[in-house]
Amino acid sequence: MKQLINPLYKKIVVKVGTNVITTKKGELDLEILQQLTTQIAELQKQGIQIILVSSGAVGAGRSVVKLSGTIAPVAARQVLSSTGQIKLISSYNELFAKHGLITAQILVTKSDFSDRLHYLNMQTCFSSLLQQNIIPVVNENDAVSVTELMFTDNDELSGLIASMMDVEGYIILSHVDGLFDMKSGNGTIIPIIDPSTKHFHQYINPGKSEFGRGGMLTKCHIAQKLSRLGITVHIANGRTPGILLSLLEGEQTGTKFLPQKATHGPKRWIANSEGMEKGAVTVNMGAEMALVAGDRANSLLPVGIESVEGRFLKGDIIKVCATDGTIIGYGMAQYSSEKTVAIMGLQDQKPLIHYDYLYITT
Ligand SMILES: Nc1ncnc2c1ncn2[C@@H]1O[C@H](COP(=O)(O)OP(=O)(O)O)[C@@H](O)[C@H]1O
Ligand SMILES: N[C@@H](CCC(=O)OP(=O)(O)O)C(=O)O
Image (cartoon, rainbow, N blue to C red; front, side, top):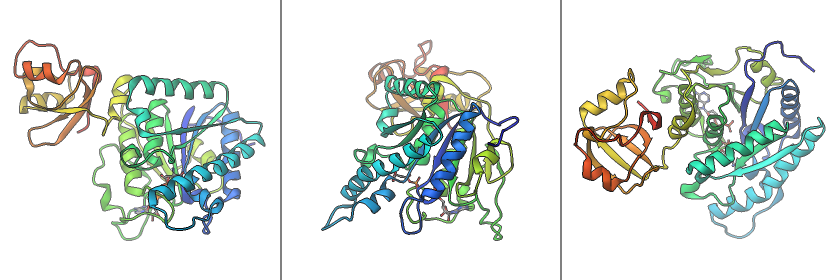
């Protein structure tokens, strides 16, 4: 066993894409699965806590079920994922057992992250599994998550878990070596991305790989979002032997997104609440400048609110927009939309969003 002298992180989320663990024929690649589980077992035995998010249920389902007749794409995904997930998790279970490790299966949908209490329950579940030295293996609950309940892909799902579990490192294992600089024409890997980088699409070829759902652009957006919350993100090739050990040893491989100052607690949950908002408020120029400046802990006061959209209650997530419609951030309302309408524009009122519950995106 390779002993790491000073591992970079003590707690990580590792996300494995379909194309990493699937052969060209679309079957589970047991050799790669063995390589990855052996590395995870080694890290776990050296005291590193690991949550594994693995895609591949739909892919594995293709080797289990030969779909017959005409079937709608959504139904096909439900059939393939629900059958394939058994094969996928059994493979992990067997492989981790060879190292004396217990595997837990956790299947989630997007709505699991939208309610704060539910979110905290999930957090407790993951913490308890890690405390018992069990390896959580997570996937989207594809059989029941359709349309608006779906994550963009497992990169998004893993990002939410990385943020929820306050990990130090989030490792996205893809079937490519990292983010290539397509702009320069020579296709070299971009080793470091700092949190202020924008416009990733200049580096990226549109389109997705054969079996995956995500794509490099989603990976970069999620990586950047997490790096802004204080988590270091790596995109690296999951098929490279020993990749996890190399990364944890601090070797420069793939693309690394450098972290900004960490954000914790409810602010972090709110930072990941895009799409879960119940309403929106538009703020005037003065309020926009105060909130975006970031030099002081400013809350959103009714005096700076120009209009209210949708119906929300105390505790709901709402969107904060500038007058031109740009989203400035998200926050948790301290009172209802009805009350907001009644007091907007007035001085000396309780903040609609307290600073601790306000996340500025720009
Ligand atoms: N600049 C880029 N650097 C790396 N990969 C890129 C770039 N632009 C587009 N891609 C494509 O992104 C794909 C990797 O993303 P994805 O399909 O989500 O993979 P995975 O299933 O391994 O997670 C690759 O197929 C690659 O061709
Ligand atoms: N939940 C799906 C995978 C969805 C997904 O995001 O796939 P990928 O882009 O390969 O990470 C499955 O298990 O097949």
